[in-house]
Image 1 (cartoon, helix red, strand yellow):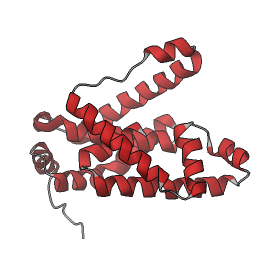
Image 2: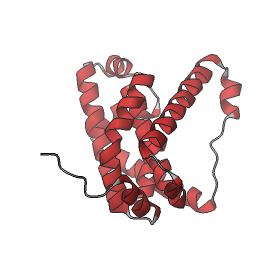
Image 3: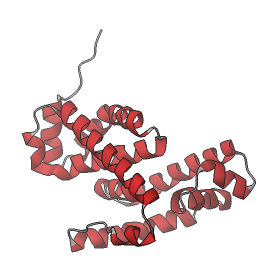
Image 4: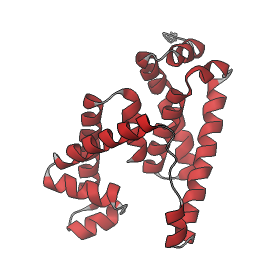
Length: 196
């Protein structure tokens, strides 16, 4: 027996356009795995695929009334995901191939003063969440997330096994995300997860 979803895609999009966070949560759980798998096939990197899921979901949340113009959400997500994957690959290629000066020229756009204030508050909260982590987890988090080291590099530097570093990283990310969810609104969480 096949269970029918509580809401159709169109109904979910209408509710999300109206700002319904519960509908967004349902939408997220309905599509996050599909977007992740599609991104992973292109990027071949778990962390990048996870980040891309957050970017795509943030974009869906931010579209507002534009969601009502989407006829086939599956196709829309696939195209958005593909474009963001290719953008990410181009970005990685640029970062590897360009010198320090070219990297400094790139700046992330900021549309609103309110968004800047929100991001500053959220960054402060993120720093607090990181500071509350146990010492080993905080060190692993800083090496992998902040400094961008691979798990293998962090493991060598900390004299730990790669599996221990992965485990610490998963626990640290879960803890940081839970703290962020408990202290901020849905849109802020997605922005932060996207940035960090």
